Image (cartoon, rainbow, N blue to C red; front, side, top):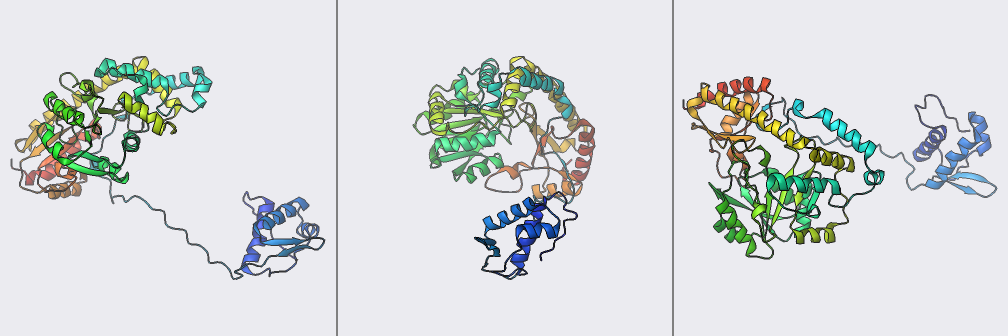
Length: 470
């Protein structure tokens, strides 16, 4: 007679426990093929459990083929191909991202100070969304382009602050710029050649490569990519950051922009992807009008994100498609669902419509301008000042720091790392590594709070000072 303990089930149902016990005995060969099992009533009485528990266990074993039944005779153990105990599977070790042995204080990574975000306002608007918005709009699937209310708010914002006169139907919402890049590749095709700025954003090149897109990396002069280099590259699609190029900080002048537009208009399959990186945080003078504002041939795809203005965790970005591409998007990719939740979209729409976004941007510009000015004053007066030259300090949330040194960039990075600091140089952002002697360090001043920034700077330049020509 089968005998099993039902103590300490730890939340497992009694029938599931009985099923597992009998199954284990069958697999292990303790119960032999063709062996008759006790009747349901007999087994229930012997184990002191209900008849329905045994019925459910036998039913599951029967469905899975571990036992079979004969009319008027009962249940029997099925013949399995392998009667020896199955080897216990060894669970694979979870793959983890490699992490350094110690956490480095970074002058590379970006962040938004947590105390600068208007949490109370956002929470109030979110509650308003949940209590007053149309129920159907909240729970139903939105258009592939996103919630209309947010696209209307963005169209108005783009007109008032970027000089773009667009229809809401041209705006596509996505969960981060990476999602939008993937959509663009599907929209324009993988058989095109995509041209990227060199140096440029490494993650951007990785996104295109994973989409099986062939990329060319084009060098720049002091105004950005030249039309001559672009013309001989064979590229169909050009991806640029004209307002604040990363990492050089170049702001492309209008003459160069017209040259690139002429290149795009010379071919029916040519387009320019304009990533308006950091455009909201030009800290001197008026914001530079986007390339899209002077595009009369429907050749520019405009992209922007809220990751810099609100917080990196706000995975909300948007792109502005020319009218004919917007039509093609819905014909070709309209089956997709928008990757941003309706709740967040309605809340952000209200945040923009009621003027909170504009006021937040004004506060953040003042905050970053003061932080930058204090940092520039530090660099001008620190012991390493004679060996430092600041470049591109007015156009965004990072600038370049040219060092007077003969040491290679890798050596200086290692010296900083030994002091617990992470720095990067211009040479780190070339897609095709040419040399290790750019002597130009990126200074991102958003990643550290004020209380940590200046002690970290003291430590950095104390470590680098022996290698600088002061």
